[in-house]
Image 1 (tube, rainbow, N blue to C red):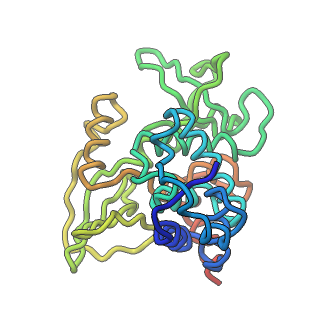
Image 2: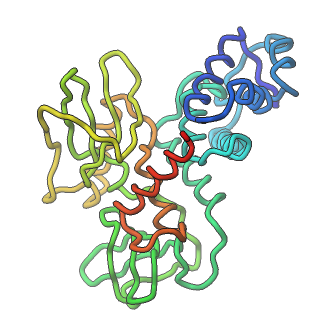
Length: 303
């Protein structure tokens, strides 16, 4: 499917947006794959024929489910072509607005992320293999989905509100129909905000990890969870008595809070999920160890 543009500046801006994420990849290489994703042989073909027909955003000419599947497919292609993790490719492609006029909505973004997580997770075997999604069945507690981390001593789980939960095997059940991947609430929602000396706002997670920087008049900046933040004050939005994973209504409140800051994507902190579940280099399989490994790999890309 070929995408047409009213002017060449649109794909040029898209290539620059993707290049900012694809560290170490030449802009010319990024332009090549922008052209291929857009349905052209190469960048020269795109420059020559980009305005041959009427420009129509794909999300307006395709059914919603088909468009999200197409977006996931192109994100996967970009991830493999530029050798970047799928979450970076997804963020870059959404921000680039190459396949549509606007960025993905928060709901659509998470849907595409889930499709990619399913596609790129390593093959697993066994009833309780790491990454298997089960449902809890604790007495007096509403069942909820969870990822299995390990089943060596009891069953270690990642849940909406916990990175290190431990249940007995009789407290979980594996549904016959596989459950869809989900993003744990603890990793995606903001608990508070730090103010920096220049009045920028840094939003942090339940584990006090920085995830977004907000500056007046600019798009939210996705920042590394290991980044050091010099702050002059702190404000909390909620505490442990009413966390967002307690109810769907609380989750909707936190999604509205994200939207109030202009956030429609997932933070880098979400990348700890596949690391904790699948990376053989981790020993403790906890949040801090996963973040340290993320930082290590990011520094290798810079060197």
